[in-house]
Structure formats: structure tokens, C-alpha cells
Amino acid sequence: MIRKEEVYKIGIFNKPHGIHGELSFTFTDDIFDRVDCDYLVCLLDGILVPFFIEEYRFRSDSTALVKLEGIDTAERARMFTNVEVYFPVKFAEEAGPGETSWDFFVGFLVEDVNHGKLGKVVDVDTSTVNTLFVIEHDGDELLLPAQEEFIVGIDQQHKLMTVDVPEGLLSLDELLED
Image 1: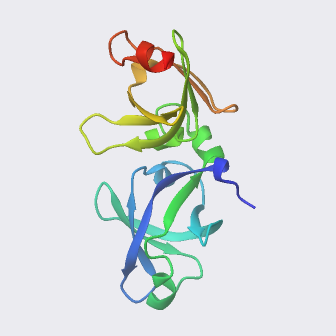
Image 2: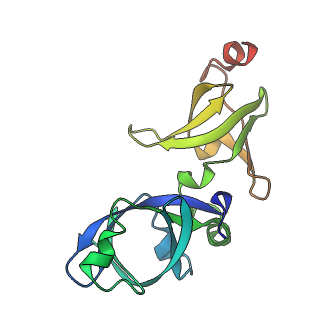
Image 3: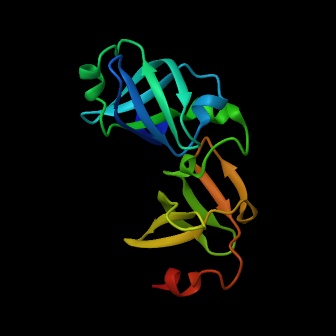
């Protein structure tokens, strides 16, 4: 059984394309094209299920048409409409630094060198020009810019990211004293 911590979200299947079971796929990370992994993981009825990729082709820099093995009709493909798509962390780790998207860090504990534990990354906000980590801190939401220069260490095995946030960027002293 695949566990949630073994995968990270890379996109969502939209609707069937054509009559042969192809699916329109909107992705935030094209790692499936850059890493040698033959399958994607779909969240179906709360269960993470792997599906082998038969073929795919890009439509834009954020969409592709994907054909999964065993899905040969539009009716079968409709079962995947609005299904979240995940990628195995173990293959993403093999890609090396700089090859993964910021979504890879969802679930990581964030620790600042000056302020200690900040919380856990629960989401990545890409709705603005600056990508932000959404960190849950004692029931509050903390937004931290997703910038490589702030990250001083990554422990993938323990899902820990150590950051050095510049003074004044966040009011961490006030937040952490509450």
C-alpha cells in the first residue's frame, strides 16, 4: 500500500480527451518527463493507486495528454476526471537538487536557524508572482517565500528543511512568542 508520505502531488487529471482513453492532465511539476519512472499515482476514493503510463504528449508547459495502461475508452477515462495525481518521492529524490518542484516539500518540517521550529509545510501557494510555502504554526498560517537562498539544509529522510530567514522578512519574533 502506498502511503501519503511516499508521494507528492504534481497535478490533476481533468477530463477525457478523445475516445481512446487519453486524459487531459494539468501539472505543476513535469518530473514525470525528467525522471525514469513508469507510473503515476492517483488518489481514488481515498486510496493511492499506481497506474502505468502507456504514453503522453505535452500540449503546453502545464498540460499534457496522458494514456494510462488499461484505460482504453472515454467511459473508463471519465473515472479519472478531477483525480489528483502524485509522483513517488523516491524517484524525485534520485533526480537530485534543482530537479523537483516546490510541491515536493509539502509535509516537510521547517526549522529556522535563528527561531527554531516554524511548523510543517501544508501547501505551496503559486497564485502570486512569488511562490510561498504555507506553513502551519500552532493553528496559524505562516507564509514563507520559497527561495533557494533561504534554504540552508534539506534532510529528505527526516523530511526536515532548515532555513535562514532574513531579519525583518517575517515578524517571526512576535509570532513565535505568542
